[in-house]
Image (cartoon, rainbow, N blue to C red; front, side, top):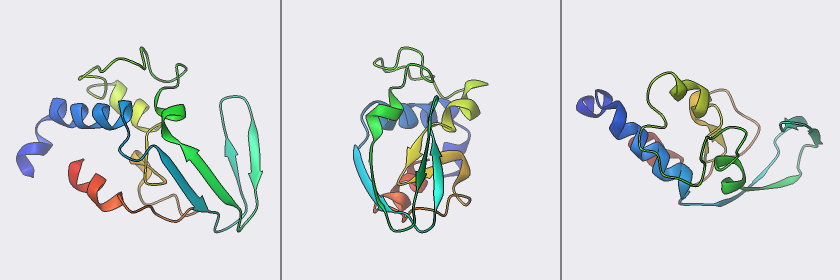
Length: 118
């Protein structure tokens, strides 16, 4: 695993493969508490106990975030763009860059596998 940490392009290719074709495109969760979800131009209040549904390609192919979103770009997550773009990638109901801070939704079944790959 140490060698993988020294290969930023390899990690970028994994992130890009998961971004362009998410292995689990649809996700659902139950809100653990009241909170607000914000998009680029709106905000939505969610009440505790409500069931939420998400479709990953809506987020991972957002033109306002990802340049040429329909193309596989191996180096998309390398360099200065890495941190900025990873803030917009969600694996198993958690933001990639904020693994320990999002406590609102239940974790999905693939969370441990994503940690291994990344």
